[in-house]
Length: 249
Length: 253
Image 1 (cartoon, chains in turn orange, cyan):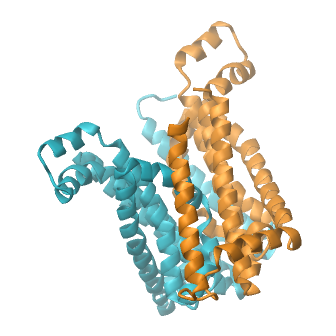
Image 2 (cartoon, each protein chain N blue to C red):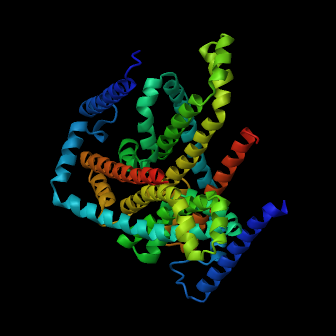
Image 3 (spheres, each protein chain N blue to C red):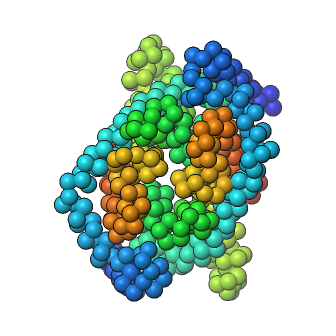
């Protein structure tokens, strides 16, 4: 246990040393206060954002938008991935397209989405949905295609209906890969949602960053950015934990 | 079910799908059934794209964007590789930094735009910086992962031959790193393009992102769709070129 803990402690120590150095640089005005906020001011600003600017409410708005986007991505993506698995000709035809879309800068369609849905939660949610659904479709198809043929044949030997085959064989066997798709989709959705919130000054956490900048509240801006980093890291950790829990080693 | 030529079926499915989608788009656009004015017909968008290609302004904005992407890529990749090599070579350092790198890599880079604008102003420099920040993380992560995947035997052989640090880098690490590094560069270029364009969309006076936002503000939706489509085509082109590079590195191994 101490062996595993040591690097984490080193990392934390380095973070504290770097923060102290930054604090000194800003306090001594070697770094202009109008550009860089002192770490101590940033921490105070986070507290201020929580107490007075509704930071937690913004977090809730962002997370709920992401939750809606990912839920929609699963509801649409799981059947689509299953369909592509069941119809390998279409699976082959669309696989590369999906891969290309997954690598494409989908967030850049946001002006178009804005034209269609306006500055609403539908727009931010939709921006999360489009990246999430592609990840879910792609990984569902691959996960199902990778299910050992033996398992499928056992199911056939027991005369399972297609429905039983899906619930009792394909889904459990493909679950780890499918969850990888959901995990990636969730992270990408969150990134897109916060990014678009910032870009259109609307919604949750991204909006808080944007608003702090517009008000020229430098510590508030840094505080909001640090909070976004914490949320991103926390989400990453949580999803990895969840995946380990789903498939204990 | 003709088993003889599965590729012919694939091509047919793709062409039919494409034709169907374009026809649906055209129909929805012409009738204004679902989105009204917000969805111009495909033909109008194609005409708008055609006009862009024959205008001078487009190329001026394209040049600005390409310059910013190139700058961001260079300023992101160089420190990214350097940091990746150090974190990859020193295990404790790398493990200690891992959670921070991972959290920062997952953070939407666009939220750093305010900091960048305060530091270097709202001009092209801020887009270069945002592109660099975006490109930095995938490159670091790929380099660190590549370093960790190098078989210990290679390193021990190098040490046995008494190679100095530079020779180790040139003869042991870099050849073994080629594939993960090029993969990191591919991902880095992709997010660099996103960073630059989002920066331009948010606040700029030139560039394709600015152009898209300008058309949006003027309700020139066909032109907006055309620019977004052109941006996608360019990004796909860049990705295809980098993928070729990855395949060449893999073949070289």
